[in-house]
Image (cartoon, rainbow, N blue to C red; front, top):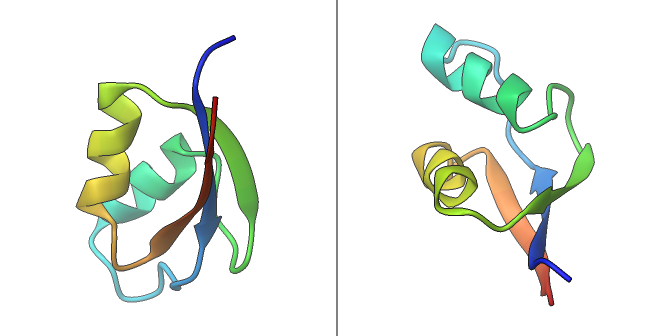
Length: 62
């Protein structure tokens, strides 16, 4: 079984650069308090790190 992380959006994309909004959509998030379970890969970790002020990792599985 692959490792996964559960990511929750805690910040609003309003008045943020378009790249940050696109990163949120790429993670499957676009509204406040949405939660998504993603595969734990270096590319996903990089996306989370780029918008760490708008998301938080709730838990890591696997």
